[in-house]
Length: 310
Image (cartoon, rainbow, N blue to C red; front, side):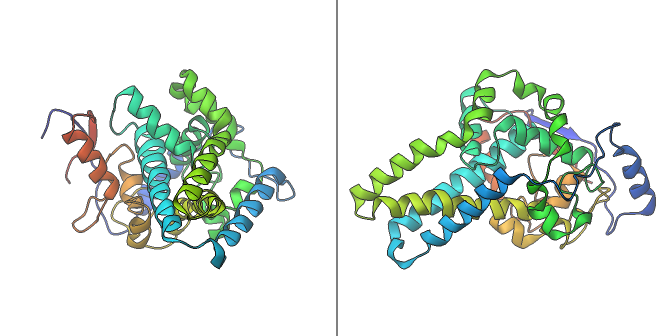
């Protein structure tokens, strides 16, 4: 095994979670006092609700025939890869949240910036909430607890107050020390402005239409990346196969893995949270892992963490 790999012990592999594993997981996942409150049903985050309604309506506008072009489709595909793969999957998730590998600081910040372009909060909030999810997965303290239903785990949790936000400074202190990440966490929404201006200029220069590229490259792309990302919280906690006793409802789902660059191998991930590779069984394609392998071959990725083969 290459010297850059750090291994972690492997839990036992079983077809389903045992009663004893679930009991132990429930005990370990007990939240700290004051962190197990369920948001009241009557409370709403109207700013978030309004933003989501607006961005979905603009995505519908983008799909009108007058805005279709091959340039728009290419723009959507490139920005989908930049934000969903490089930004959310590689940057926010495997690099910043779990530190499953290391890259130079300049490259880490590039990935974090790509993640901020997804408009899924800045890196500090995203990482803090994700680490909280792993700590309390599928318990009452989990902000997108899948036992509350598909709608809740997919997107409903965002529309009510999120008590887990109180834990973000404690859980993402490593990022809070970086002034760039503090800035990005505050102003991530503003990144859409220079992106929109660039897309408008490219659209006019190529004949695709400035507004066509803006609509396909921002609202349509955001809606696509949102729902694909949210499927990891919802679909992979509802449907799929179980390879490990992870202590929660996580599943390996091949069709979610296909659209999320390998994030759908979610039961594997919950069993080995710090592994840079999620597709652990034969035939499980993990395109994010292939990106990391390429970076390792180029000398850009090191200290790659992988589980010991069981």
